[in-house]
Image (cartoon, rainbow, N blue to C red; front, side, top):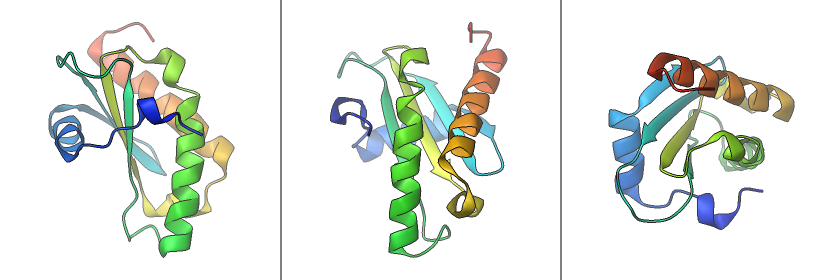
Length: 119
């Protein structure tokens, strides 16, 4: 599970990350990453967007749990000032956890290559 201190909770953080962040698409998810200049909460922050297009409440909750578990594995790769939003696409309902984790790492790597940061 993703520790509470790393969870993004404020709507303004979500909005800023999605609108100003760098985007990388994968078949089952879209990753947005933004280097935040705010000196607020320490550590990287990760947020999830799982819309009704993914499925009913049971399916959305299952996808959210899988994504939170996969997001835990990228925490060591994130800068403390980094903000990340993971948007689940409808195909994510059929994806296994290992595949979501692999796509998450691939998307983060693509963002790092685009921004010129070491991956």
